[in-house]
Length: 248
Length: 194
Image 1: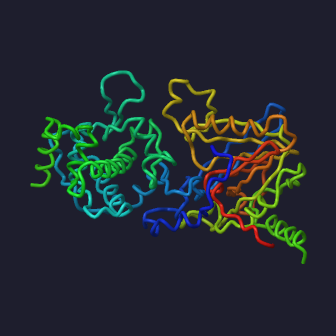
Image 2 (image 1 turned 30 degrees about the vertical axis):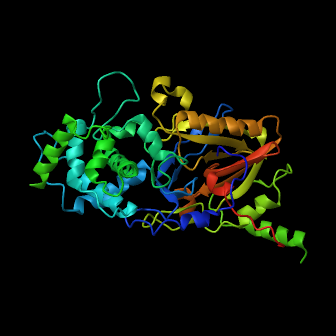
Image 3 (image 1 turned 45 degrees about the vertical axis):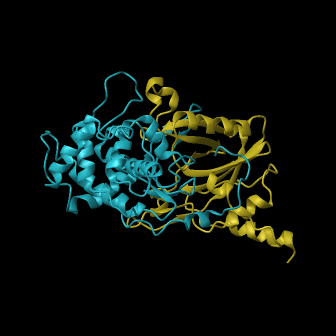
């Protein structure tokens, strides 16, 4: 609620109509987000009176921005309800890593979700996400680059604090379909992959603005890795190797 | 019906919206804070601010309404969205990457109201919100909150009501100014005859 003055005459109803129908996996109507059931404990105030405790049902809450926002509670609930029954890529090849196949269900589920929500004509391939994770973290959910900066990259897809802030910024570059996670939650493989794939889609938009209509998902990966000026970087060769192996 | 009396009818209807929470005291505006636009905004809600999740227990809806309190009955806080811990109990080095709800607690005539922001924010943004609310409170007698109540299981089961209730707030107003969530800043108001 940063602004005090009315800025425009757009009604929330008009804002909502920009979206298509909600994705069938979402738990709340358009323009609302899911908040899980929670308990308020009874407590005694400093004046000695007892404030009674209560338990509140899960709730669909109007987004304060009018944009589509998804929070960890709903990301977790969607994965639990739908991902175990999905089939298809990524390929069950560990690429030589101990945990190489542990996150396939999340990769499969969130790739499908974002492909359907963002309506990309050239859909993202789950195998490409798996190859990207192999090069970013080696499938280590707690991966951190060296150093002590608490805002450094985290988790399977090495998402930085800065990226996380962009993903949830109501007036930022994403414009819509925001993902609200906090830094600690990026250690959770499910939340990291959900946020990371949303970021990869944004990176494709950025690559397209530089390259034009010929932009492919490899360009988005180069942008994701900040190798857009050096697409022949050895890290990109490694990514190409993994991706080729998954497509065999 | 004259315009003012029709407005009063609308206001009365708004107050009669389904209220699933505990019995409230008189929380109408005794401070002259709210104007016609505020009441019209309440009337113009085309969808509930909160509602039940599909397939999760009984179906319910909750609309925003204005509730007014003495300014000195309210305390402000930022609380971690996971642990509900107050910001001042959290290690400053850990606060940076965490998410905080802006929370307003009200104790009024033996009843306790907890108002939470619709979403959570970084520590800095939460404090910015709290600072804005504090500016609206400073030196004021009354404060009005635009909020929807979250029913408790006791409410829905018809069990005995407690003395506390939980709400999600989308706006706050005093004679010092008004702060609304972006979705309500953008509401198109109908200014024609009522």
